[in-house]
Structures are given as C-alpha cells and as structure tokens.
Image (cartoon, rainbow, N blue to C red):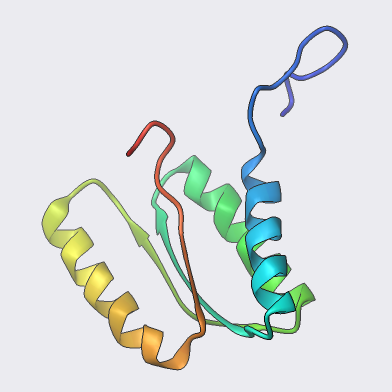
Length: 101
C-alpha cells in the first residue's frame, strides 16, 4: 500500500481490509469467537495485527491463533491445536500465502 499514489494503482485488496471484512461479516451473523491459522511471515504479522484489532472492536474473543511455517511436520501440530480449539469458536480465519491455491 505504501507504493500506491498518483498514477500508481494497486490491483488487489489489502490484507487489513480482507480481515476486517471477514470479521465484520461474521460479527453481523452473531459470531463472537474466532480462530486463526496464519503464515509465519511479514504477511501473517500484518494479518494477525488487524485480526486481533478487529475481533476486539467487534467485542469478540480470539480462542486460538497459530502461526505456521512451510515445515510440514510443524504445520500438522498447529492444525491439530487449531482443530481442538474450534470446539470453542464460531469462526475460523485461515489465510493462504499469496499465490497459493
């Protein structure tokens, strides 16, 4: 977003606006508890910050938040922890890395 300006346009949505839109939509459906599984990189840090802020703004609670790297064994353990936390959550926020299917 910092490179956008006069004559320079972004052809995407910011991660912050994506997070805000998803959490706001869930809150309008009376969902108040959330779980997130985010990549352990700069993108994940931006998403995590806005996720935490938006959940708080909507008077929700974060039941679990896990960061993952590309290491498959580590990812399996984090997915297990998130799956266990889903019993206490109404919404799951999972964001794939850009370019991932």
